[in-house]
Length: 399
Image (tube, rainbow, N blue to C red):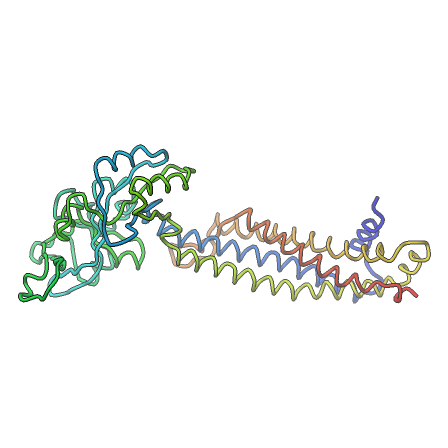
């Protein structure tokens, strides 16, 4: 058996004659356990909040989206559509047009985006499944689906035939405007559905038929502003990107869901790192107790160390005893803390004891990645703390 490891285990499981050292050791062990448990619970909570926050964009944003590299629109031919259908990994795609326009209803006005979509859109995007009221619009009609936030701001209801919802789009062209009535393309549209996803998205889009949007913007029948794609799970992302770009002669840029929400992903990652660093600092402070406990143990066992040294044990092996003792304390404390943290997370997942609202439980996610992060952090910091404390064992101390 490894001699330093044998002595280190004896020191861990045996009590010291000095009761103060036993108390300090228990405090150090308790600090490691609580620190590991707290770090795991917090990381699990932020994982839950991340999943909860991204669930809105996952329901609304496509797997991939192609936008023109220059300008607001591009043209797509029948042959290009056929090539897109033949790309391995693409389940379906939808042609879209997005443009900022003015909506007017009952003397109230709102500037927001009209999003023209074709009949394939319901197979690519889950927006049609998020209706708060009404139904999805029928293709090739003037029916539209509005966001809950827009309906609130305009005091807009469904099938209100006494008041008309109008959309105004500036006419393309140059020169001075002589008659304001001729400066806009106008259409009367009929709201048949209201969608509800989150506060930001509910105030952003009015969904309309692609043909109606092309007519308002004076686009050609094959002129669009983007294409949204739904892909098979675990499909080759890079291959799909390159094939789409090749079909359009590299005149479009293809972004995945993370790139479409780069700001949101960056914010969530930054918050996660910040919380991890803050709690790691708390663990570092708690490990000062471990350093103190090991130094007190070294002083308490000074006579035993002298005996071992005189029997031929090298100083480096004596140091290794306390290095292993502190590391083992960190390992055991980390395991116990993780077990307690996992129990708390599973209880919250199953029984939803802590609620944000009456109907929404505080989201937590159990992740093996978080287990490894916490265990690795505890063991690494515990090893460093033990290394610092064990360096106190020197030839001078034993003389």
